[in-house]
Each structure stands twice: as C-alpha cells, then as structure tokens.
Length: 391
Image 1 (cartoon, one colour):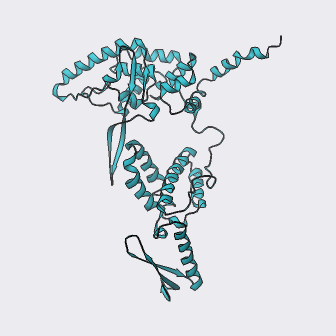
Image 2 (cartoon, rainbow, N blue to C red):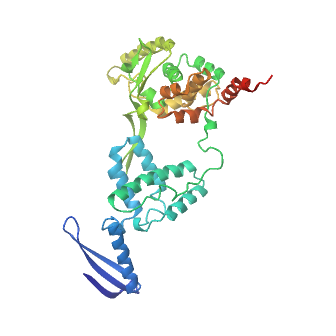
Image 3 (cartoon, helix red, strand yellow):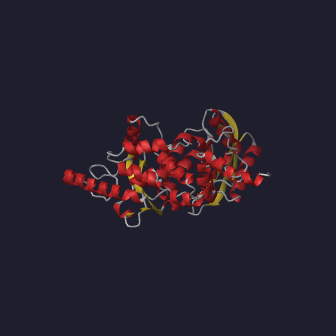
C-alpha cells in the first residue's frame, strides 16, 4: 500500500511516496519513504529500492554508509578472529585511510568503482606508495565480501578490473635492491666485538639460523635440542598496541609464528652449543642475583629479571653495538638476510633456504634473494659459457 502526497522539505517542494513493504523476519512492519522532485522521480527511487531487494540486498541497505559498516565489521566481526598484531595493522589502515577518507560517508548503495579509483589516485598523487594502496584495497576487498554476504551490496569493486592500483614507476617499490647484508669482513667484525656482550648468544644464534626477531626472543629452553643441534620455532614475541574502544595500550604478547611454515625445527651450528650453555649459566646467575624479583618463564633470551625482551629494546641494543664499533648500520633483520645470503653463496638449494627461513612459499625466497647476490648470477652464467665455446 502506498501513500502519495506533496510536501515541503527544507523549504523546497517534494513529492513524497510512503510505502508499506510488509514485515521483516522479526515481524516488524517495513515502511519506507521516498522523496522526489515529482511523482515519477519518487516512483523511480522506489523501483530502484525494490530492485535492490530483488537482488538479495537487505531491507535497510539504502541507509548503510561505508565507514560505519566497516568499523562495525572490523571491531565486532574481525577483531577476535585474527592475531592482535594483525588487528593492529588492520586498525591502522582503517584509521588512516578509511575513517578520514571521502569514502567514509558514502552510502554503500551509492558506492561506485569510480569513487574508489578517484580516492586511490588522490592517495598516490599525495605521495602514498603503491604498497599502501594495495594494503588498503586488500582490506576493502575483504570488507566488501562481508557486505555481499550480508546483503548490503551485490558486487565487490576491489576484485577484478574494476580498480587499477597506481604503480610506483618501473623500480620495484618493495626495494629488494635495498636489502642489506653484512659482508664477510663486517660479519667477522660484528662477531668479534660482541664476545663480551650480554646478548652474544642471541646475536650469534640469529646469524646461524636466520630467525625472525620475534621468533628468537620467543624461544624457550625446551625448544633447544643440544644433542641433535636443532631448535624448534613454536612461538613469537610481538610488541603490539591493544585497542579497546578509545583506549590504546602497548603490550608484549606471545603468539604463533608468522605463517604455518614458520612453525619448524631447524639445525643450528654445533659450535654454538658451548656458547648457549654458557649463556644458560649466566642466566642462572642473574636469577640468583634478582631473587624474588625474577620471573621464571623459561625464555632463552630475557631481561635480567626474566621478563620477555621488548623487540624495541633488542633493536636499540643491537644498534648501539654497530654505532660503538663503527660498523655500517643495518637493520636487525639484516642478520636474517646475512644468514640466507651465506647459504646461497655456499650453494645451498633454494628450497632448503625456504624451509630454513620458514617462508610460506618458495617464490618469496626467490624474489628476495635474487636481488642481494648479483655476483652469483654472473657465476651461474659463467658455468654455461662452455655451451657456446665453438673452438
């Protein structure tokens, strides 16, 4: 049943069309009002709304804005299904690139691929990298899939050819060429200057295994098999900002490693056994000295009070060593890159390196380390030069 009348709204004359659309699943009567500059305009809006319902959309789809629904999806649907560190990353993307964006107030029913494309172009032109936009697009793609499942929209604009991600010139924006490793001389210098450092065992074990930062500070003594010289990676320590409403607080958390392949058991150099055992004795001395203030948690590498090492403090300690002994600065993650590079330089197969590093697939390993060893490429060509020797 429809009620058609002329009315004045905000000082202008409109044609108003009120329609009874039946009842929802809870038995509540569904009434909608459509305004138009004339009768035909109002009826067209009603027809468009009905078409949306016939396409599978919910009866309130015409009121939902991208920003409000995205916030509810992220904080109510997604938050408790992913790692806190992953949620922190998603929340950052939402806060920086959705909450304050021109997309936020747009009603989902009115959203067009051009709105998204224009926003991506504006971000790119303002200096944001392609990777930033790709991460935003990945978040929106998941969000729109949810909206489709809920009947809010009928298509996902972030899938297929609807959207083009602006690309950063011809240079790989991931800057694989900027991956830094220690030269053999720098590596030897680093090893020499940390001989009396409290975290000597940590630095050497990282050089000998290529563990990620969070993986090595998450190790516990029962993860070490001294007899077989293996270490099992089962957890990682991560510093994350936990978000509850408007409250944001930094915490150290223990979580599963980065990927399924990151949960692994790998060998470590046999000559590290006495170094690790000496470290264990030093740790026991620290425990005796701290007395009741010491927290027993079995971590191999911890503070002098037994607490997990904050990744930020580990990086600061590492950087102080480089600065003190005039070793060219490289990120802590460069210890991992150095380990992998030494393996390749000694002819270790790509697949083996992938498994040792815990990469989710072999392409990741190949994409990273083909860029850090250009001399190896030339050696490979030299090996087949004989094929073309026609003498």
